[in-house]
Length: 145
Image 1 (cartoon, rainbow, N blue to C red):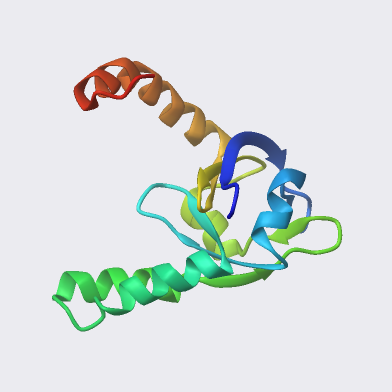
Image 2 (cartoon, rainbow, N blue to C red):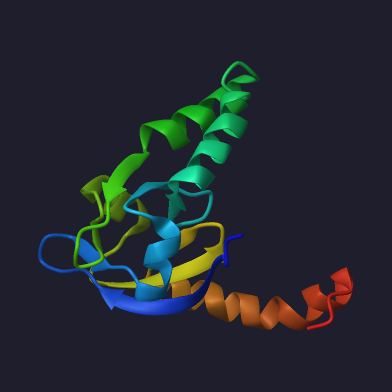
């Protein structure tokens, strides 16, 4: 059973657009990952087994409503298979960096079955909003946090 991907790490892009993935994530991710746009302003990075589950789920939508077909198209056409090199780096495609607005510093966040890569300044804004909502949301849902 997988341990999952959890935690928050700050890294910088190198001059070629690569980032080092946190060492604790690498074994769980494998040698290849799939990166694509997210419904949030970040890049989602999936281990290949998780990507295959998502792809299978989304492929059911490709013949649905026009809205579902567009979602399928957006996710699939922005997807890039990335290799994790021997130094633990991935090259983030320019298209995805532009979509997210990544300049230099990124936040690499483990979100259970995937990573999210955010421009650090954007992530800090999202984090602040989440902190303000944390107690209220936990109480509404009955989560004992």
